[in-house]
Length: 261
Image 1 (cartoon, rainbow, N blue to C red):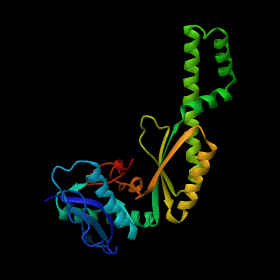
Image 2 (image 1 turned 90 degrees about the horizontal axis):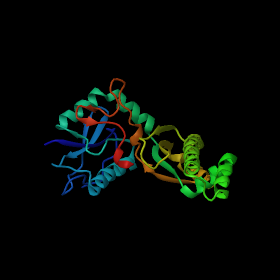
Image 3 (image 1 turned 135 degrees about the vertical axis):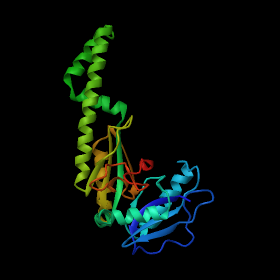
Image 4 (image 1 turned 135 degrees about the horizontal axis):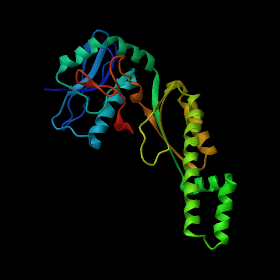
């Protein structure tokens, strides 16, 4: 039977809760595979596994339970190896890399921050800060709304101003939070978000980081800022020096967990 991999941790990790179940229906019993100083948290892989909410939550729960006791390198949902020996083989092959990542990420958590504009508020802001746009709008108003070309020109200018503001806001958000973080990873672009960043934070500094987010929100009423976390450090399980991000090493996929976004 194939082996489902939740994450990688130290062989010295405290024992998992007795009877903990993972993905599958019924939940497959979670177990530990050890190789040298490393361990993989695994279970048997169910057939026809799909990224349904119940399965995603099961994957996250195993990582949360494991990470509560010690550092764990989370794998993507759906990471499956041909068998147990394939998993231990990867642990042996990449022992130095995984050990380095465990040392680096110990005591740290990830927060994902997304931001988008509040439409009415950002329009008010760009109009207030741009006298040329105000003049065009006023001229159109006095002309009974203006001609088609005049309305088109104003609309294009407003869109350009909002897009420029998006870029400024994305940079400002990152700069405001970087001082409270260890590392930053930019997430994939997605429709509707002007910023999508994952930030690695010392657990001891989490309160200060969250306070920085709140200050940014208070100072930027034209932005809708959303935060998710604390999470296992999905975005900071970097590939080895010879392995491109998002590839598969011996059947165990490394990299950020897109299911967390």
